[in-house]
Image (cartoon, rainbow, N blue to C red; front, side, top):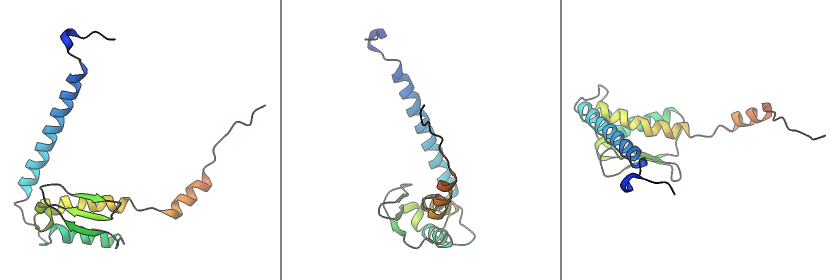
Length: 133
């Protein structure tokens, strides 16, 4: 059993540093979002319209766009095939809303399977094996 000075485990310091870094990153994202949420996009599209446009241009028609509560709680649910956009993004026409709506829609686009590519890669991969003496 390792001995710690007066019951203090030094790995708690690493956890504390990680928590501080996460808090700073979260504060930076929120301040940047609020900075650009005041700037209206030139196209006048809402976050939901931008996400729909990105999905349709990629040929994805089975993902539904839903409105959820909260602030910056946007996500893509692959099991239900839903793109959930928060209050700040769904109906807003700001540059920040379109930028945030782009992220989950790009993730849903990138999660598409490519069966023809998988088949061609499998046929080209050869795994060396040892047959023994």
